[in-house]
Image 1 (spheres, rainbow, N blue to C red):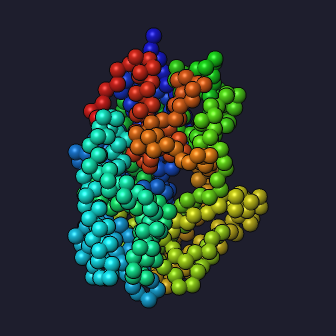
Image 2 (cartoon, one colour):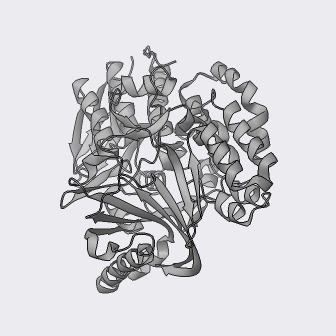
Image 3 (cartoon, rainbow, N blue to C red):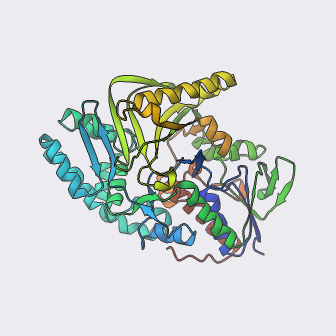
Length: 492
């Protein structure tokens, strides 16, 4: 007899996608979410008429006909209006030099050759690689069957070549001093990622396949929630799961914080993976291979601070994003920085009152820095207020008069994220991050010691928003195989 009910912990993108897929297979599905909103980390929040987005930078799968677009269609998130910025980012110096990473590859090449003629050969090689990769979106692998990966073989030489060194290492190969400093920062100011990841992003922006859905992350998540409800699924908000119930070697439901028990034939957890493993499965033996993936606490939190400004300033003519190189380092929170990465939302008029705009600064930080500050609520609040003032001051040279134009200033720390989503102190592996197969194939995390349990989401190895959605769908495919249900999908 096949399973008839599934309980899903968390209404993040992975949980919502799993819910839709399970309902399409006829399962009774209940999603339990600790917060009052869908989306998990894929969220936004509104303050005094300004909407601050917390997630989407570039959404993969915005071009009709692509595999990821078809997945979003099935989940109710497409079609929708999508904004396609002309630039990936713009790097600026205090003395006015500017390098714009245009998403039109011909325009980018011409621009770079004009600015940096001494690096002609390397520039042509860089742009040529992006052109060659335009037909191969790496993130599409999460929705393709294993045999479908053969179509990426022609791209393998470029991916291998450009995957051998980081953005920072590639930057050192240029002769022009400005380009050497700027190039390392042009992919979300992540100098340590492989160049191949950046080239994939640039190529897909050039193909108008990566964009920003109007309204941002929360409406995107709500569209999938609506699809789930239309399919007959139920979501209960304000429900914190304390334990996954296991009988023998099988997950049989969950227990909530109020001691209520919810029985089910299978459990899919879209909660923070360390919380699932070390708290919700407290009395269960965790396989050594899984423990190895979460072996060491890692206080480093990438993009852990969101400083969002609602400003009485028209940003429609500004670039989509900026990296401001500084002559003199500045201290922001626990970091001394020689540059500041800035996101500007002038393209999306729905995020601010007419004629006004939203500016956001994302900062890496140490989780324990804020954890220690929070021991004194007064010190924690003062630190957030001071950081907000420092960011406004640091941006003042680029945006004259900004201080007087700030109408809303919002600072979200790693503790803010943890309070609303449950995502806290991260962990690193003894032998590296989740396997490439896990990330590229969108496979959920499973435990050999517990049947009928799947872990999905970013912390379980999901590659961005598409990877998390794919994990949820793959979890239901595994559920189908385990219980001999037929999975129906038009995506692959």
